[in-house]
Length: 505
Image 1 (spheres, rainbow, N blue to C red):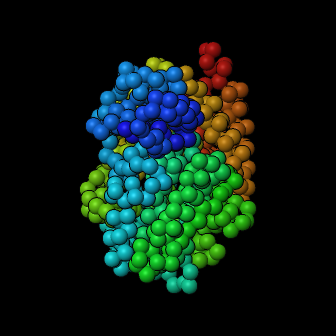
Image 2 (cartoon, rainbow, N blue to C red; image 1 turned 90 degrees about the vertical axis):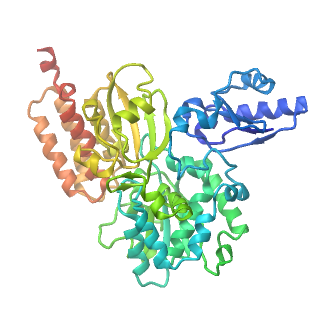
Image 3 (cartoon, one colour; image 1 turned 45 degrees about the vertical axis):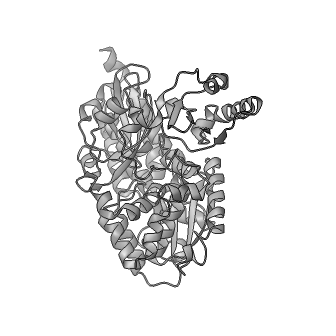
């Protein structure tokens, strides 16, 4: 019998380690022939700790499990969730990037290979650099970190740059509120990220790679470091990748957790040991990146998706999606929602289908008021825009952005003026200070919203003008995108910005 208990941070925060300890004691006391496997999460966070029992006829789920539930589970008398793969939230997904997450032992390379791992890298090794880059371009993959820039074009730029050294840098500084896809895959299927980075290295001619991982993710850091060590020992990394005669190696670097270091040029400065401030562009990192050399900077999910593209082919991946948004999107559903978790599906579902159909509406049972999509710099989407399809261009047309695909749900008790104030305050706190519109504008923004709350009739126009300046004049997305949540709150929820005098009238 195999017993799966997640070691994912969300599951351990909810008591998975304690459940695993009791399971181990009970198994020993009863003399049961069983193996406990610490897997990643399946992404159904409201069911964590989700314990799965495989007695040879499929994996039966129990959750959320407490230590007190363990005896009944082992007796077979506990009420189960049935086969985990048949739970609707899981069964209705199109899992490509997250196909192995929650299924395998994260640090068992043989288990990884038995579930399709290394097939992509093996295929890429037989291809030329130009063919590898073209395969990524044909897949239609776009950066999943937020910008949505075509990955193939970025790789082509680095591949064609002349330099004695090139680098692959993985941006794992996942700092957006309500996002956890990067952490989840690093903790649940770390070899897929390593494989993706190795393929990227072969494609652009880079022999060194770095994962820049925030210090707030100690479990992900531990798992990734262990996985890199195993990959190196087994010949997946090093001077002779899988016996190909081609070199690629990588290491994990720990960041201090500044939000702005999720911006690629700040990240590169931090990686070089400098203060994490934004660089002016040009030059692009693709031409002058880490240590001034051509560098691919991709998000975790972008790189972790590369192996399945090479395993199944670019066309297979590109056949999913909507318009120019090809493949799958890894939705992270959080906030005041009944069924929060990670849901991978093809682009094209409407926002309403995600929030009400998949998420099940609010956890409080009150009406949904707004959904912030794309992290703290994303717009607040009102219910009137719930027919917006999840796609880069489709969200842009409706005043929003997908960003890293995090969704935070709010019920009708949310005060949108306070949410707008929080956005400005967040920008003021996290600004690196490099450019004036962000550094000063965010502070003035907080003050201006306070003036609106106090009843200043002209402050709303001033806030609008300030947001335009920040959008046009900031060096990076922190200052440039903060107007999205602020202006969407102001324009979509004007009643929340009515001053106390107006409200009384």
